[in-house]
Amino acid sequence: MRPAPVAAWTFAVAATLCPAADLYRVAGAVVNAQTGAPVPHAEVYIYKSGTAFPRAPFVAGVDGRFTFDLPEGAYVLRAGTRVRVENYGEQNQENGFGSAVIVGPGQDTGTLVFRWFPAAAIFGTVVDDSGEPVEGALVQLLRSHVAVGHRVTATFRWYRTNDRGEFRFGQLPGAGRYYLAVTGTPWYEAGARAMAGEEPAAHPAAFIPVYYPNTSDAARATPLLVAPGEETRADFTLTTAVGATVTVTHSGPADLKGSVSLTRDGIAGIDSFQEQQALTAVNGAAGKIPQLLTGVPPGHYVVSVTGTSGKSYLAGRTAIDVNGSDVGVDVPLRPAATIGGRVQFLNPAAKPAGTLRVALQVDGVGAVLNAAVRPDGSFLFPDVPHGEYRIGAVGVGFFVSHSEAAGVPFRDGLLTVTEGDAGTVSLTISDETGRLNGFVMNGDRPAAAVMVVLARAEESRNPVHYRGYQTESDGSFDCRNIPAGSYSLFAVEDTSFEYANPDAVRPYLADAKAVRIEPHGMSTERIPVTPARPQ
Image (cartoon, rainbow, N blue to C red; front, side, top):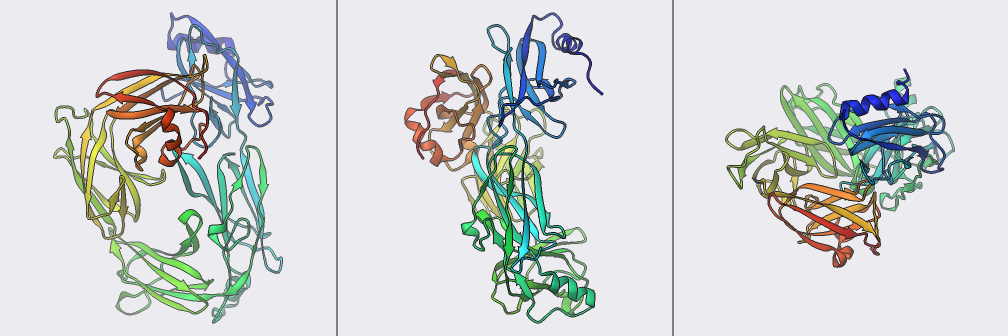
């Protein structure tokens, strides 16, 4: 259903937001960021800054143009198609930053250009060394991009090739770097023998894993730099080698339900799956459950077993080397790690009104675990999977001013957790935060959509000691809830700048402005854009 006519809709928005206020024209066009062509019938959403829900969408015409009449204030504009919308002021798709549109006297908001980035795609074909398509090959797509100020590489998607050996990853953000890893099993080893009811071959053929651009060495993998709207081809050839059978047993109980996985170090240390199976039924003495992983190519692997027995979670991992000969491995299982601790307040009189929560975030901007702080200040994470985590407090106006850990490795704010660990963390929570706002100037003009960087004066490897803020349409910035202390402040044009990477920040410090954030205070600064510095 199309929305009401523009005049009626803008009047309704203005009346709802501020009935008696003067209205200001906000108008522009949604264009393709790559070609500059209008995006016909783009859907445009408007939010009053600080609100969670937009007004009814405005649907642009074939020329991509939109018009609103709005009262003075800060607004978030989002636009795009029914498949994907993006933020106004987004300079690239690295980090998802955008700029608010500042509406009011003296603001030029009548000729906005909303740059919309079309999705990209990566496709290709996987064949064997005879040129035959490989069906069911597992293609791993990894994305490397800047998130929360530092470069992160992580698995983005998985895909199984079809009967023609084809794969396709569509609707990809058209920025960042993409890596591909491929593994598979020869059909004549797995499929044909199973269909014929035959036993696996003594030394079945196996495919050697490959990485773009068709190298078997993960360290030599090359990223694909995909532009918005671009379709990039990546083809692979899997070569055969003598495979081996890995026989897995574990120390878990007979009723354990879960999976066994065989992984190897892939690109940037990210696990790549060679094979994963559900745990088989009990078949052996003393609760042992043999599991056969066949057709494993030569390489260094980690065998992981994870599962549940009743309400208990058990897991374990063991490293092995495979060189064409069969390997047997027994994986000892242990319960999931527990991370508990206690919170104390630097200022006991300044506690949050609601429930304070402690958060464990998988390093690299991953999943977050939360635990409520009890009235006595204690907290507990009962089942923490293996991994590296950053710990912090969840509460507006509060931050962790000091932290210590025992029972688990802890460095630069990073906990390294392994199954069976029982870690204890002591956190000191402070409300001594301040606010920093101001403007960035490019000569005598406000610099919109540039990156403001606020770095602790003392160099740190902990990303929480850095802040990044993309300026609004009038060149303004407003950083809130900043831990009190001394900082360096500067601005760069590159909004994908790694502002939480001390190596990237260091060349800019000589020209940065020293600022002091006082507890519960507010500072206002005006700074220029700093020219790019060689890394």
